[in-house]
Image (cartoon, rainbow over all chains, first blue to last red; front, side, top):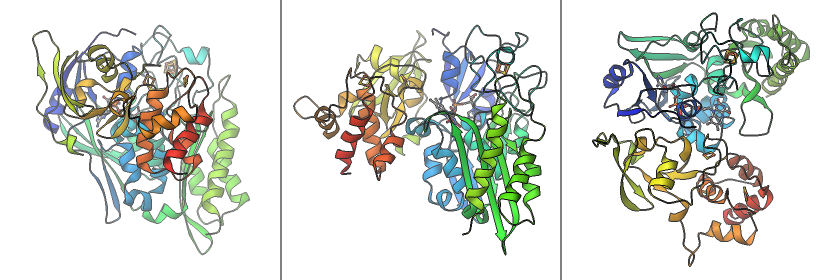
Length: 329
Length: 167
Ligand SMILES: Cc1cc2nc3c(=O)[nH]c(=O)nc-3n(C[C@H](O)[C@H](O)[C@H](O)COP(=O)(O)OP(=O)(O)OC[C@H]3O[C@@H](n4cnc5c(N)ncnc54)[C@H](O)[C@@H]3O)c2cc1C
Ligand code: SF4
Ligand code: FES
Ligand code: FES
């Protein structure tokens, strides 16, 4: 592992970061936990790293029915924030299930959303991978496809998005704020990501120099009591999800009046289970209701050779998550 | 966290290295580092503090765990230049042969190691975990999951930490 070195510049303020980040070969560094891995693995070769870790974007504000997470807030600080622990338990649970204590101290909210796929072909130099080396082919599709997506993949790339936090935020309909050379814009988190199509090298719609400045969740505190993040993995801790489900419900008079569902490990981006959530509305929680939602969750799945087991795993994970949040309170 | 006050941009010397100032085990320390050097390589290769180990160099094993401003991090994924001005604590800074840190003492008494390669990282990680206040053995196991031990000394590692935690 002797990747060529890179230059270093410390961004003095947000405008400086955007200007420096738009330069050729530049890469932002927040916690560095993914960027440094990708650099060592030869999956990313920046000529210059723009250190944004000291920018004043680490604030966590929880008031008036909304939660604002600065893009540079560390995952451990987000999870430990009393407002998050009380009103946004889903996020706290997703973070507690993310990586290890050391990584959570380094990793930032923005970096967690923009971390790249764990596809082993992508992260191993010399393997065919359209995401790392466009046009080289997709090693996973022809080879080991256990990790591959069930939904949203293309014939160019079948990789899954790995972030636990992004799945939880997607379920809570979070928005991201972006600042770039052309000004600022705001969009639903799920719109940040683009499906692989014929250009799998781009995971997101971010243009060079565009910086995520914050993530906002509105009006979700009422879902806190009935929310859960279920992560199924190959070992009990310190492992990425095989499949995960973020679920949140609100009940009135024994009937589901609001439902949010998203899944991880099954698609190139956090995958909202909209039809499943819609089918829950107006029904009483229970096995029959949950089975309908689970069936809709797996509709249209397109398995490859090694990942068909994830269909049943997703179905059962949706049911288990709904059992957790749908019981008597 | 005091270190989030924006420090002066590190100076570039004419050989392309960066003049990095940190507080290392309580002492001010200046070292010229390559812009792309990890904190782990700076500690081991430039500062010759080889107590911090390199296992995987990819964030997966925890052998390189050190404290930055009292928080445990993985030094192999830490870009050294990004830690300018921060207080870094390594295994060399927590105790001495004459006066062991309570966790060092407990690891020895509980036989919480075999080859010892993971031990500096285990102990630094455990120092930070104790500050978080684990409530039971399960919380210690979960809290220490970022530190692997190829020799499988896990039961004794958990026992040593639990003793110091008073559990
Ligand atoms: C051993 C290990 C285990 C892990 N396990 C899990 C797990 O179980 N679940 C999980 O979800 N994740 C896991 N991760 C991934 C981890 O969550 C990410 O590496 C981390 O969140 C990235 O955050 P960072 O601040 O370190 O990002 P960096 O590495 O600094 O940046 C990542 C990318 O985002 C860009 N970037 C960062 N911030 C911004 C911003 N504000 N605006 C624009 N671009 C930006 C960078 O240029 C880079 O391309 C694991 C990582 C490791 C090393
Ligand atoms: S699935 Fe995507 S990331 Fe993995 S090898 Fe194929 S192209 Fe590369
Ligand atoms: S050497 Fe850093 S985690 Fe393995
Ligand atoms: S004692 Fe050998 S790796 Fe832990």
